[in-house]
Amino acid sequence: MSAPRPYTLIAELTYRCPLRCPYCSNPTNLADHDGELGTEEWKRVLGEAEALGVVQVHFTGGEPLARKDLEQLVARARELDLYSNLVTSGVPLTKERLVTLANAGLDHVQVSIQSARPERADAIAGYAAHPQKIQVMRWVTDLGLPLTMNVVLHRANLDEIDELVALAEDVGASRLELANTQYVAWALSNRNALLPTRGQLDMAAEAASKHKARLQGKIDVLFVKPDYFGTTPKACMDGWARRFIHMVPDGRVLPCHAATSITTLRFDSVKDRPLADIWTSSDALLAYRGEAWMPEPCKSCDRRSIDFGGCRCQAFALTGDASATDPACERAPQHALVEAARKSADGPNDRRYLYRGR
Amino acid sequence: MTPKLAKKARLRFDRHSGRHMVIYPERGLALNDSAAAIAMRCDGTRTVSEIVEEIALEAGVPAAERSSLEQDVVEFVALLAQKGLLEP
Ligand SMILES: C[S@@+](CC[C@H](N)C(=O)[O-])C[C@H]1O[C@@H](n2cnc3c(N)ncnc32)[C@H](O)[C@@H]1O
Ligand code: SF4
Ligand code: SF4
Figure 1 (cartoon, rainbow over the protein chains, first blue to last red):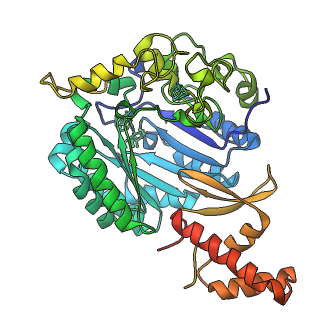
Figure 2: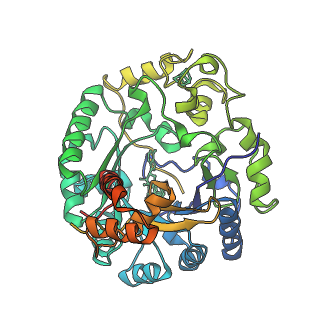
């Protein structure tokens, strides 16, 4: 099988971050990761990604602003005519630096907030950052840059849809991403404290769909449903190593942000091999690319080209077998694992957070 | 109305496919030549009928086919709007 064309590079520049979100999708074993790629290495990789077909790069992390060379990487992306998006918590940032980034050719900024209510937001982030985030969003739109406001949703903020939408309108966002928590990495460790009830979720979904209709053509309101409450899994990354190249700070090439959690796979690094070589022939990327690896019931299911059998990281985390059908699917042999978690959200339990470590 | 591509959308040539694409944060939209000719003119200075006029002139569309061209333009502009790719 020839390798598909990748369109998007997700570049996690660093895992450093001042915040401590309990749902953070960064790995839980942060200390075990190698040193970060340097400026020149990233510049080379951006060129290699463009040559493979990539048209868009998301600079993310950790907190990408923690890298002093971000401006240079944005400029390099612009030189390659790549659409660049900064995915950030907004901490630490000055207006001057944002202007520099805009002048370097940044196309879009996505700022995540934790809640529309300041005290709640800071309690979730484990850091007093909320006022700064609001300020950053205003700077972004004042400079005429398009803004996405992102909120990760869970049981402590699902009741805020109206407030969140009002805030997005107020700061001038052109997109609002209301993204229910994906239960990987820190979020899986905190699942008890984060998982909402079905009732909470339904109310939020209804509120979001009203605003979506009202703001049609003005603000793109996106409500990402949690796969734990559906009947079929999400089409994770549009398929393993198909459209997205995901790179972690130490230069390893993944199909998604969470894949290093699959400890049975070894991911190749751009420190050792050219990106094109890794994309077309790395064992880890070939492992679940396409459909040949699929077990039943996926193998003969007519949804397999739609959802690709779901998320490999979730399959591994919940069943210990990365090639299992995603337990979020109601047809999965191990769907009971997800059902049990969902039920536990209704009962009383310990809702304290385990904050993301450093 | 003078349609204008949204701030978040960037129209650019894709050297790999030889086509134009509209790129925006969550996706890209590959355009065929006629769609590209329309998108290129969504810059906030032309009305839909001016866009039709220009393309017709440039491509030498005979008068008899104007109305189908016009329909294409109207439909494509509506598609862009529906995808949130035009300024409100
Ligand atoms: C890991 S963060 C890195 C960038 C930056 N530190 C931030 O938080 O915006 C990338 C994006 O993923 C979102 N995110 C983090 N953990 C998530 C989870 N478990 N489920 C869904 N989205 C998550 C964040 O809100 C952010 O928009
Ligand atoms: S999700 Fe929170 S803790 Fe994780 S990188 Fe982003 S701001 Fe930092
Ligand atoms: S059986 Fe497999 S392919 Fe079918 S819906 Fe479930 S996860 Fe998707």
